[in-house]
Image (cartoon, rainbow, N blue to C red):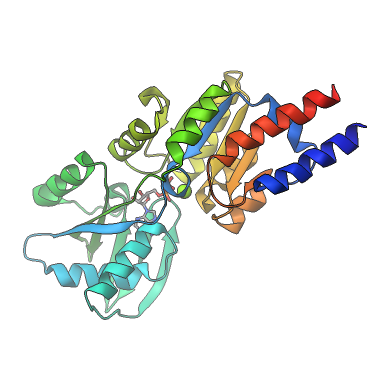
Length: 295
Ligand code: ADP
Ligand code: MG
């Protein structure tokens, strides 16, 4: 009877929009007491738009956007898409890029029209020994105070501008998180984005500020999972990105958004087909019900 009940459970899962890797996944799903949610693309739509471009003193705004769009054309990150779309909308031509390199969770670099360009989180520019200067520093903090995500562009050793992108919380996220709470789970938010943007999203969906971990490098997302596991938690991770794969694999239960990358889906035990976070509590309820009919 046990295998049959499990098969029925996985079949019912498929109807709900949950793809389960194997019947054994239901057991870990049932035991989960903590859910770590990736921010961008999981709680938020991940469809970012460019809100603002601030050029450094003496720099031309269109040139800043044009160079940024040229290099970001090689990246699939939602921030990159927002910058490329804005460059297209402004009618700017893109230049070819040599030596394009993307560093997960940090940004991109390469050579555009003979300039050695870097675009990404402020930390990345610091790694390149590029200083921002007071104007760009104030553009950064201004953008952060609105809950948006600023990235910096520099070339040839100098900071050239700040590009600010923002996305929106999915309309279903707050409801999904309140249902997870009703099931007795504690939600956490983890992101590579800045702390203010993370806290703004957490407040909107009902995650306690103490359960927000921001400025996390992709390699460190897995550490957030392990820390909670060491505290005795049974941890589910929900994510969509390449940068979430290690954490999804390390979690007691990895849940990928069906709208996410193949890497995330492969690393997970369970896929939420439509990318609707409300299916996460559905999956946990299903596992609890299926296994209680067996026992
Ligand atoms: P999240 O955890 O929210 O999905 P990521 O780990 O993908 O975020 O990215 C973290 C940060 O790294 C971004 O907020 C941004 O500052 C920077 N970043 C990553 N990829 C890019 C890119 N292609 N262009 C510019 N900045 C980037
Ligand atoms: Mg993401």
